[in-house]
Image 1: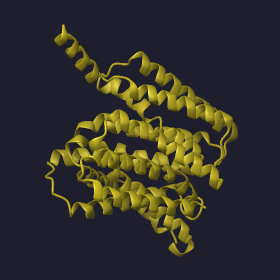
Image 2: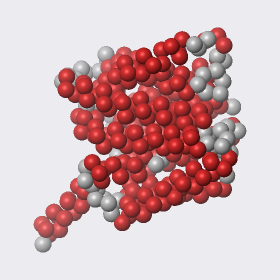
Image 3: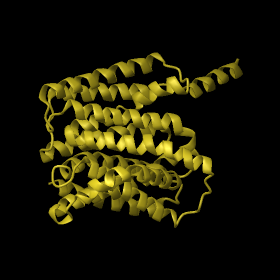
Length: 336
């Protein structure tokens, strides 16, 4: 049944991509194209949790999937960059991309993928929504962003949801209900990605998505391959089911390459507050598919955790940043 969902989402993405190609130049269709792009990208990422979980129970493990994803992403972004306008990257920024790859790819993907192999895809998808909360904390520490009452309430609700999720996992310790170790690893992945956004935000905004990802994936390959090459050679391709290779292909091509490009299209047109709403598509798709395929179960406590985390993230993303406050203060002085 998982393969049927993969086929459906790939067909859905192909139809949407064809529509976007024909209508991307039209100004009236641009907002619709942007919304379709973001919805498709988040739906693709949502399906990655049950698809990755199923692959890691039929022939490969977490390290195999991380290594294949990094290698595949590196090859795809470097090949596609050959057909794009070449952007000169100074040596200083090339070296900074190594740090970005460490937090944004290696730590993030290792923690999430290995965590997913231990816990349920339901819990893993819920954990992915916590990233804005970690980003708010780090922005306050690193970028000196103000913590408003709305942000504080959002963090409290999000932490409450995460605590319920962890306690549920500790009580059951099952890869269908949840596992404490896997939940903590998935939360660590979101912390790592939030740290990547806080430390390298200016760097990744300077370059286009192909330039950023080809250098990040290259550094990730260089740093990860020495530790995973021996593990990869242990795979017996003939012993791995065909459906597992299809699922790996989905994670590499759709979840690592296509979804990144679709996100870029959406972010160029829509406001950040609108973009943040689509974060909720990912866990909805993941939970729905996991329940339908029997890869996960949903306890009432997990449902409460979902509501709390969603509410917390919504409050954090709706809160004003320091720039918004300064802009409002400046307008107030001008009106006076």
